[in-house]
Length: 91
Image (cartoon, rainbow, N blue to C red):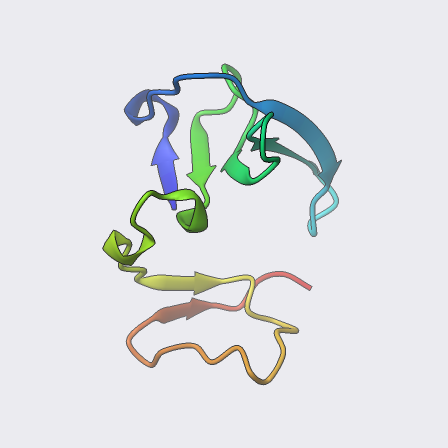
C-alpha cells in the first residue's frame, strides 16, 4: 500500500536495510527490530512515498487492493482476481 510520506505517522523504531530492487536501484526496507517482520518500504525521512506491507496491518482484511503490480514471473498458483487492474512490471 503506497502513501505519501506526509500521510504516514511512524511510532517506535525500525531496522532499515538496503537491497537491490528489480529495476537495479537500491530499495530500503524497514522491519520490526523485535520480530524482524517487514513493516515499511522507503527511506524514512528521505523518500516522499512509503509502501506499507498489508500483512503488517493489525487487520489485513481491511485492505482492499485495486492494482496488482510485480506480476510478471509469478507462479501459476498466484491467481490475480479479475477485479484488479494489472500493471505488468517486474522481472
